[in-house]
Length: 259
Image 1: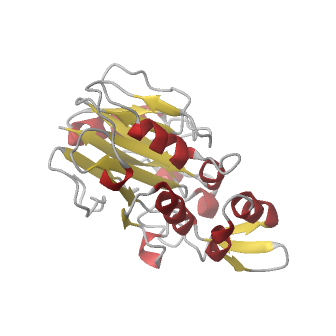
Image 2: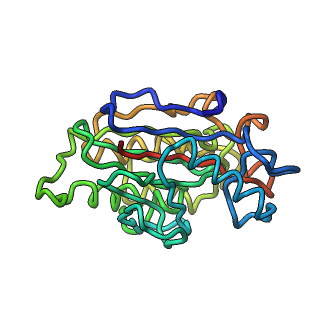
């Protein structure tokens, strides 16, 4: 594994493996330099294919790439699942497949239970995180996560742990009133995650909003991104892709799988 990639520091069972790539260690050039995994951003297809093959080799299992639309749909994944399913979250209780989310400022959220029975990866940009009626991608993933597995056993909230990967930081994510209202309308405490900026503008703490939503769901152990500068994609151009910073940008991936 490239030494610049991130490995979650969390108390996951040994059979649960996870990582988050950086922009380094691949075959892409130019603005996509160098480990771009997105096949929809204008990069050379051969370079993307080579990078994806490298990722699969490192994982030792097949990463399934979704067609992410900033929604709340959850795809149940198996080793035979095709790439390109329209969903913003993947969940699996099988080996041989990695739930994979691509990001370049949005927040990747990885989930597992303390018994290592299932894993999930969610793409939490502000639209997917806010959702509709206070129900976003984390709520839909949580619902799927707690549903009975093939063994008939469900997962209780206190057994679920989460890891938040790098995303646009609270000093870089400027949003309008409509974004703040989308959160505060259904979760008043979300107001604490917005700092006033220019008139009609706010600085949003995306990782903090996700932590609030997870707490409401009963997830008590959340690791990784705490909103500090070290996790900000925008402020670290040599390590992370950022669409907000560069407009034309590659994509990183957060992956979680069972062995």
